[in-house]
Structure formats: C-alpha cells, structure tokens
Image (cartoon, rainbow, N blue to C red; front, top):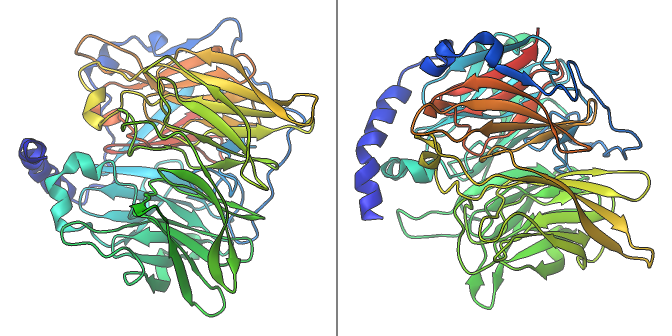
Length: 514
C-alpha cells in the first residue's frame, strides 16, 4: 500500500489541480490516431448485415413499471427496478453516425437519466467531489449543476482506489416526481428536485445515516453505496460493510440490520434490486432477499455461492461483482468460482438454484457488471454477460493493453421435468473491458464499448454493436484513441432520442445517427 500511495501521490496532486477548474464545454480531442485515420476506416459495417440493420425482439415479457421510480429505461444505471439493462428504445444503427464529446475535467459522467419532460441529468464524479449536472442532450453543454458533498480528504492519496469507489453519486435514481435520490459521501441520502425548464436543482430532503453505518477508526470509514425504493415507497439503502437499512416513507423512521455470519462481516460493493416481492442484495458471500416485518428489514432467504479463494483482477472485492438481475421468476448473479466463474440462476420465491453454467476460459473469467436479462412469453430467459477479467485498475487499459475477451449469451429453458437448464448459445471474442453493455429490445442490438489490442500506441476505443440472436458483429465505430476514453466501469446509456451516451475519464461522449 505504501508503494502505491507514493507512486500515485503526485498524480493525485496534478489531477486535483485539473479538477479545480470549472471546465464544462470544451470538446475532447480524439487524438492523433483519429486525425490520421481515414474517415472511411472509422466505421466498419459487417456486409452480412448491411446498413441500418435492425431486428427487434418479439414475444418479450415487459418489465413492470415501478410505481415510485421514473419511466423504465431512464430511472437508474441499469434501466429499471429489475436491473435488466434492457431498453425498448432503439439505439443508433451507424447511419452516418456523429460522435460528440465534452470535457469536464477529470470527472466521469456515469449514469444518465431522463425526466418525464425530457430533461437529461447525470452525475459527474471526480477525485474531489461529484456533481449532479443538467445537460442539453444534443450539445452536452451544462444547463445547471448541483454540488454533492466532497470525498474525504484522505481519499486523494489513493486515486486508483478512488476510481474503484462506487459510493457518493455513481449510483442514483430518479423517482416518480422527477427527483434525484442519491447517497452521498456525508453518509446521507439527499433527495434533489429537478426544476422545470432547466431552472436547476433544489434540495427537497436529506436523511442523515451517519449513526447507522459501521463505525470504524479513521481513516477507515463505511460508505452508503446506493438507495432504491421498494414497491410501497420506502427507501432502502446498503453500506459497503454490510448494513441493510430502510427509511419509512410515512414516519422517516430508520431501521437496519447488519450482515454478519459466523463473526465474518460481509461486504456489499454493488447496487441492489427491487422486486414486488422483496429486496435482492448480493454480498461477497451470499445472495439475499429482504422484506419488512414490523417496519424492520428481515431476511426472507439467504443462499451462499462460490466466492473463490482470491479477488480476481477485474473484481472490486472477493465475491460476486454483479448487481442481481431479476426476471418474473429468477434472480441471476455471477459468482467468483475457479477456474471459471459461473452464472447462477436462482428461483425468486425461495433462493434455490435453478441452474448454473461456467463461462469463458479457465483462469480468465469474471464479471463486475450486472447480467443483461430478457424474458420471453414461452418461459425462456436469455442472459448476456461480459468478461471483466484483467481490469484490475484503470491503468491496465493503457499502452495498447486490453482485458480478456468475451461476451456470451446463455439461455435458461424448461427441462421438461418441472425444472430448468442453462445453455450457452454463443460467445463473441470482442474485448468489452469494463463497460456495462446494454440491449436494445427495439432493434435487437447489444451495445458494447470495446478496445482492440495494439503495441504501446495508439489506444483505439469503439462503440461496438452485436446481433443479439447470433452474437455476430454488426458494426464497429471508432470513437477515440487515448487513455482518457477509458469509461472505467461506467454503463452505456441509451436516451429517448436514440442517442448513446458513454461516460469517460474526462467527461462524456454521445453517439447518434445523423
């Protein structure tokens, strides 16, 4: 740890200087590689599919609209309360595509949400502090901002660790009143109203949770990772060191429980999932479903999974890296097994395993992203999983390097005996790095943010579209060619205007058809 601190202390100082500037509207240069690449070589369209290829998915079971969240597709990082990472909206088809980018200092704009009146809001997270930003969805220029609480000062000594910290604003959601609900670095939850017609933000309510997190000695501290509402409107939250809590919507009373098994404190790194039947949380030891009894959180069921023997390169802790994804019948996670990770499919009602399947190559498999899941009316579920192995920190994608390849589709089908089996349908050898993919139900394309290996320089990054049915490449669009285009665990976001938004280390990219 000492060596790490010394190595990055100077870098941290420089980054702090940069982030102190109020830079909001400067286009990001795409690098020398972009300028020397002929325009006709910046876009590859697979002739097998041709231009404007679109193949909408049919007989898909729609995901229920959460009554206390904004519209499905645009209410949180994973699109909906089921965390499906699917959206009915079509994305770009590479029809004379336009790439736009905006520079916001060293600040990655992660989640993109849209209000009922079409306003675009994001949270841009820097080393020093996160900011809620209201943006013009076309030009990406800032309309208004709201400063969230700063990070603790000692975090700056470890900038790589900061980039692996999901607390303080990376996860937020929009509620049914167009309000941002966000967990902050003050160990609190703020509810921030987005005012009509781009007038800005206004704090509506703040819940202080500092007495409910795990009390640790300085400089160690617990962190509120994220918050989400249940289907009755109560706000649930989780902390890094295993606190699961709920805020009563009527009384504002706060009740919690701690995840401790055999004197071992469990950790929660990712977001959680909201079903009509309960709250699904994955720790670094087990998958849970919680509910309320006498207004207190209780455990409905708990199922342990294979957490492996070590933290793999590409994981934020030793355990599952996935936010649980649910369908009408199942809850899906990836484990940390060796030599291959498994995709585990459990029944929602009791947590028993329905089926499991190992994926990717031996000693080269893990995922730190929530699985994509789409459910069909014929009782079949399709799951898309991207490989994260090798992304131990953001420097691993510099100097022409990439992570291990692999994105795979798994189908869960009835076995004819009352149960289900998992079957691999296809695997692509694209390099998904750390980006969270999205599936467009509207055009049948899986959108990835990929990188190709090169010798030291350059570092080309691409928006890559795969055909959902076959896994074949449909098109690949060159976006940029420098370290700054790394999106560092961020999601691909598809807007209601058929535009894709991708956060990166210096700001935000948008990609749309002309």
